[in-house]
Image 1: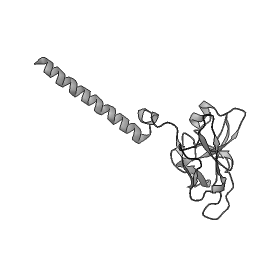
Image 2: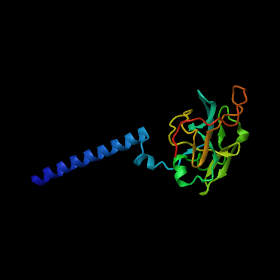
Image 3: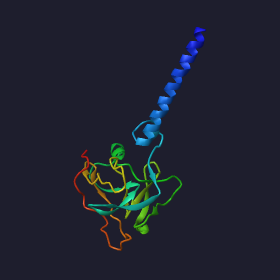
Length: 177
């Protein structure tokens, strides 16, 4: 009789542990917190470069979130840099990015990365995300750090018909490294 009670108690304990584990995984996926759910997603990809309005900078390029270009310093952007500044990579199987509203299709291109993935470029400049930006149009990465000067890309050929500069001025803010 006692082994039946122990088995039943063990099953309830395992069931609770599984429920807690599933809840943690679901919460991690919903909040975007690092963990099991985000570890499985791997590198970020984009297939469309579009625009978003920023109150200070005007119309800027985004690929879900704000994208940046780099005027490099003498320190190369390698593994540590790429964790803070992940490259905007094309989704597997695509050869070109699509231009969303306000984006000049002729300025979109790609460059091969060291591992053979295709990184999206605009006006010949490779594009990156900033790890601290969490929404389109949010600009926390207009900074100068040891890898160089990071800046947002202004949309050229926007639907408003006005000619925007090819880059925006670097502002203050963000995180120094």
